[in-house]
Each structure stands twice: as structure tokens, then as C-alpha cells.
Image 1 (tube, rainbow, N blue to C red):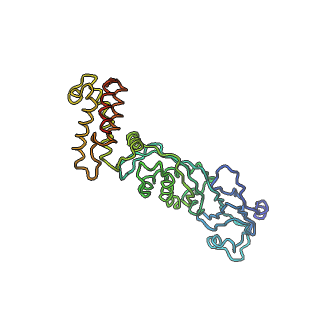
Image 2 (cartoon, helix red, strand yellow; image 1 turned 180 degrees about the horizontal axis):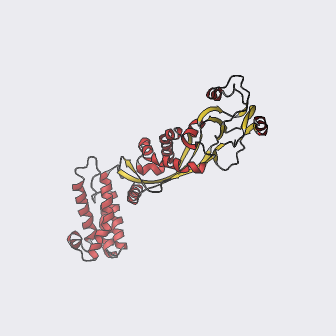
Image 3 (cartoon, rainbow, N blue to C red; image 1 turned 90 degrees about the horizontal axis):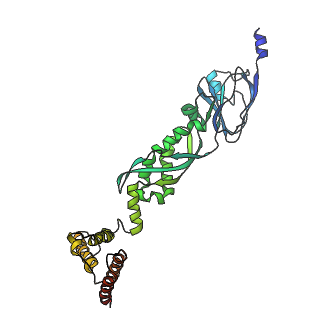
Length: 343
């Protein structure tokens, strides 16, 4: 009876895996009740690794090539099974194949804003997305940490775990890059490199190699976007606080002047007719001069004696005329006065 059972058994002469291109990372060779013929062949293709596992314990690992399975080529398995060096009987073992090809165009992104620390603004919220690429580097570690005894383990099965690792290290990447938050959009390559360096050790612990990371977009919160717009329009925020205060005051001038036409009180109410723009300009200049007195190297408050200041005042008066606050006659009279000073 034992002889008949032996005759009916099927023995495996060739063990190989032809990848089907469905994003499989790990695949278990179907053994069923079959046994591996001693001296049989193991075919491992390029971008593959094969691992023999004995009762849940990782044994021998094979890289690309054709391997003849004997006690000499299976030293760990031979030790685990206590085989004699002349052992030639068929044997059972689980065999797993792993794809070491690059898994490209994997997406990462923040579903919700991520809070990070920034040297300029303290705590800010960041939205960003991009892609990354990785491959299996250590098949033994990947089997032990991730795929286990599953018949098949795919890229899709791993996607959520890896995406979480990328997001987990965004704060570390921003801190290590040293890039101010407002400059992240203009330094995407540097930020992506910092994110790769911060995340790579976590990938390595899973038996993976993080090959590349790109950042395709970073979005700023609305309140910081307004500051960035001012920085672009002015070009001096953070460089000369005195000039920035003057800029803010000049921006407020048309709104203050509107109070004249509406019968406003206070400064605007007193500055009527032809003197509206002049009075407001002089008042603002005096206020700025007082406010900037304690600012280290701040720019001096504008006066009506310098040519540049006179031209700027003429432009402001032109705006008041265009808005109907000054009449053509009033504007022409004041323009003539100012042009005399230029002469």
C-alpha cells in the first residue's frame, strides 16, 4: 500500500514563477500534496527572488538564475530538517517568489491639512501631494513583516500602509529641509528629497527600498496666501519694516479719502476740497515718522521735498481725481504747485 501511495504522488521537477503583471509583490508556489524532487530545478528570473520557508521559518534565499536543488544548494533547509549530506529523497517546503521590480507612480497626498512647525509662523497647516517609487530590497524581511503566508500579496494591499508612512514623516521633512513654509512651493525638489530621507528608514524596516519621491503641489492656507500675495506685490516684507508700514499706509489712503466725499469726521472731515489729498498725505507722513522712530534701520518717512515723493503724491492725487473725490480744477492746481517744487 505504501508503495502504491508513493507511485501516485506527484513530484515537482521545475519550480518557477511567470509574473502576470497584476501588481503582485509576493506569490506562493502551489504545492498542494506534491513534493519537490531532489535535484529538481528552481528558475528565478531577473527582478525576482525565491525564498524557501520550512514550517514558518525562512530558510534559503535564491537570486536570479537556474538552481539545482540539493543538500549543497539548500544548506539552511538541510540543517533545519536534519538531512544527511547524501539525502536524495523528495521533500516538502513552502516556496515564495518576490518581485523586486520598481513599483513606480505610487501616489501620496494629504486628505486633511497636516499641522507642521515653521520658523516664521509657528504652527501652520499644509496640504501636499506627489508620487513615489519603491521596490522589495530584503525578501526575508518583507515575508516576515508584511506578506507572511498569504498566497498572493499585491501593491494595492500595501498602498495604505506606505501612504501612511509618507504622511507621517511630512513634519520631519519640513523641519530637516530648513525651508520656510512660504518658500516650499518654490523648493519642491528640496522638500521631496527631505521627505525621502525622512521616510526611507521606515520603508527599510519593512524590507523595502524607497527609490524616489516627488512633490507635485503644495497649497497654502488662505491667511498665509494673503501674506504671500503681499510679499510678491511689495517684494520687501521681512526686509524693511519701515517701507512695509509706508506701503500699508499708502494702500489705506484712498479709503480714508472717501470719508471726505461722504462728510466724514476727524482727519478726513477736516481735509476738504483741494487740500484733501495733501492733508491726508501729510498726516500719514507724520504718523509714520513717529511710528518708525524706534525701528532700527527703517526707511525715513516720506516728505514732499524729494522728487520721488512728489511723483508718488501726484499719483495718489490722480487716483483721488479718478474716483471723483477731487475735481479736475483742484487736481490741476495742486499738480502745478507740486511741479514747481520739482523745478
